[in-house]
Length: 488
Ligand SMILES: NC(=O)C1=CN([C@@H]2O[C@H](COP(=O)(O)OP(=O)(O)OC[C@H]3O[C@@H](n4cnc5c(N)ncnc54)[C@H](O)[C@@H]3O)[C@@H](O)[C@H]2O)C=CC1
Ligand SMILES: O=C(O)CCC(=O)C(=O)O
Image 1 (tube, rainbow, N blue to C red):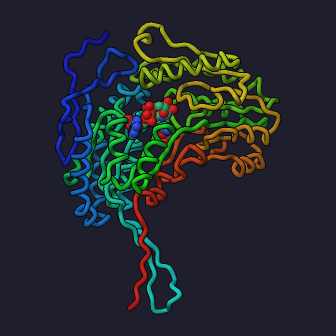
Image 2 (cartoon, rainbow, N blue to C red):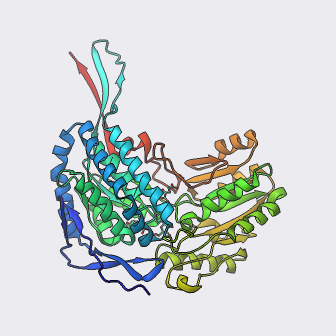
Image 3 (tube, helix red, strand yellow):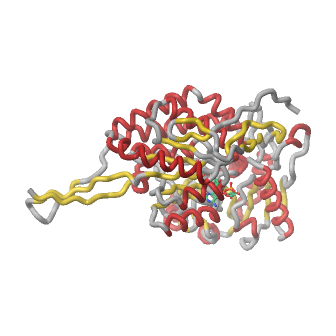
């Protein structure tokens, strides 16, 4: 067991100051690779803290909006620069706090830098169109204004990229922000907010309040002075947040779960398909809303695909994400760990055949953490729980099909519609898939996970509130359009 000498306490960030919660309560943030390692203590805030942060954000909003977009963008460039300088420390904190490998954490932190730079540039781009008016003497055009104060409720699985891809567009378009990060990764969030603090954002423009979802998160969703809420997380909570915002007429955006399929056609490059299935399904321990979870394989290549997949999965090294050899880290929390194990038990009891893994890892130091073996089931029926519910763990379900048409039909048999991929060399298969698959993010010969910051991202069906985040699409949520007609 590691002996810890100093464990730091991290504070809320309100009106430009680092402050403790009025509750004076803190909670530990635990390393999921070693439950005895406390990464830091974070605030357990109350509604009073939320109110203070919202008041600060509201007061700061008018003068922030009065600055030009170019000027607001300059602050984002500064934050990007500081984040890049701190990349190593922030990535190590992320790995220690939620378990993903250091390589993934570094790539995610760099993604945060790119997102900040992308939206910094947005400050200098157009925010409206001139439209020909039916009145030849009139000028008809659109312009955009910010919503006001935006509440950002973020999950633990991308603790740098998700808060940044919500906050950066919100800020550059003239909103002020109150962030409520997931408690599991609140230390990482505090280090990201330190970058904004040091970039010199005016007081109240950026605020962060840590604490439970039911108090701080719900407090944000319900708050009369929060004009827009952007959320990523579970469907249950997302719908609660959406309902609360809708009830009081606030704008909301929800990015929720997935049950993402991969289709392997009989003409696929099987090595590529195996790599994509492993990477899409098991990287970050399967804890991505875009993670592959159901694999539909044409019967003719089922056995060779399965053999290659099993061969490859045996090579994956499980361990502490800070260890350079590690390919897959632990589940991010004890509750996530138990959820994943209970889904594996359901898979077995409902009759799926377990062909790899399925156990908790207990070897050596792994016993101190929330490690689960990569797990593969076959003979999975689409009515089974593991084929229907989001597991958010390293669990793959293999399903044989007789045709691409059948694969697409079964792949669509889910309430979700976030991402989907096909492995094929046949352009006809690819085009049929693109046309018929019900998903917001579609890949051909590439894994289901992995989102590019400059392109729209979001899901169909129950995966999202049908809005899109990132790229130019972000302007739709974070601003309102004004249509203007001027006659001399
Ligand atoms: N779409 C995605 O990327 C994510 C999906 N999930 C799914 O959710 C499952 C459970 O994970 P959780 O961490 O419990 O997700 P969650 O949906 O409870 O948490 C997401 C965020 O919402 C906050 N929150 C919780 N209750 C709230 C409430 N009543 N009002 C407002 N905000 C609230 C949390 O504190 C966190 O900041 C996972 O197993 C996975 O299936 C979880 C995280 C990310
Ligand atoms: O696949 C990705 O890069 C992003 C996934 C994501 O947005 C999520 O898990 O919430």
